[in-house]
Image (cartoon, rainbow, N blue to C red; front, side, top):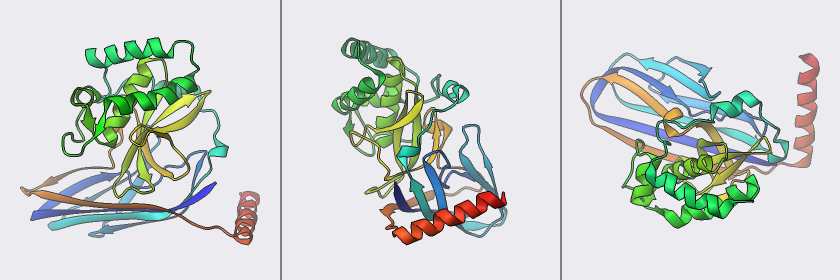
Length: 282
């Protein structure tokens, strides 16, 4: 079990004022069997009324509209999340089916299918977990981390053709190949320690339980990852989407952090007592 203090801050600036700016954010930590939100705060500038709901994948979304002229938009999500991988439990069959098909950015082309064909020869007779582990090295052998060549709309097929990309591309290639060799996989967007930007990784369904794999770092995900959203690929769960009126150039600055929060035993016991009282009251 690990407690993560997280911060996700984004600043958008426009060279000319815009109006009627409607936005949708996935900047609040997702709730799951392994991830519990203990504290959270969301600051918006300009201040605006927002509503919170869930999208079709169960991700938390925040929506609002800034009607008046403004030349910037900032949001800062921060708080404390407890991650405990020992609490993983099997997911319902319906959730598995959501991720059975490919998304807009994770459709297999001839190159990906050929890569998957060679992998099938290597993974014959292996367990699903062994296949998922082996796939980490295969993606790193085929991809080089290089920012600036791809963008948020780059498909897995194009990324593999380039042989280069960023974390989103590594995750997409991993997910397509995983599906091609018979694994159920999904895309995750969130925060990770030692990253100054949002991060992307994959999760594979093993024995009915989601296990995180980070093909960019070449490792199994630990408790230092804070998931904000998931989907079939990045197109299903962008951190931010919006539309506005006006002709303006936009600049974006992002800063994120994930650090460990030390928990004393007495504090842990008091929180357990508080949770028990809440359960009794409910």
